[in-house]
Amino acid sequence: MTFETWAGFTLASTILLIIPGPTILLVMSYALGQGMRAATPLAIGVALGDFTAMTFSMLGLGAVLATSAELFMVLKWAGAAYLIYLGIKLWRAGGSLQAEARTDRSSTAKMVAHAWLVTALNPKSLTFFVAFLPQFLDPAGDFWTQMLIFQMTFLTLAFVNAAGYGLVASRARTAISNPRTISLFNKVGGGCLIGAGLYAATARSTP
Image (cartoon, rainbow, N blue to C red; front, side, top):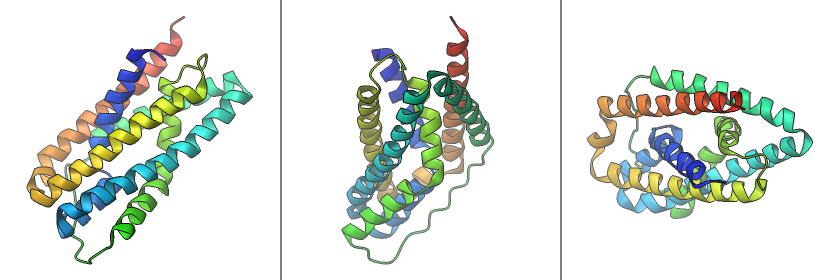
């Protein structure tokens, strides 16, 4: 794996993680109702959930690559198309974000478990990782070394992102619920997804 590949993966992951989704809405809801005490346990739960989803995705990708290099390339083509589809859908999304404060007093363990369940059991997470990871994977390199690097990078970013949202939501709700801000995040993230898909398709067509 080259540094450029890792840097591209890190940049794309950072932008995509910032985009508010179901997991971030959960983090914001807890933070709005329970303050900064919710930030760390929720971030831990999100990281564990992403670890679960990525691990299952990696096992599937490893099985495909071990079975057939041609089938893996087909999966990359399908993944590129899926990323472009998600990017267009996200680009056209509005700027609304509904996160209601949770008034129930939850324990640390409950917040960790809730964030883990929402993140890990979302079918879209598995589908996304299967489509996203192969775009940065070198089939000629060691599969598990690359996956370990990607996983540790993504999980670190996911933890920091979730904790950051929790801290901001506990202090300044308007900063992350402004429609213009959310719309900008959606457009940047959508453009990143479209770019990743187009880059993958272009790279495969080059000898």
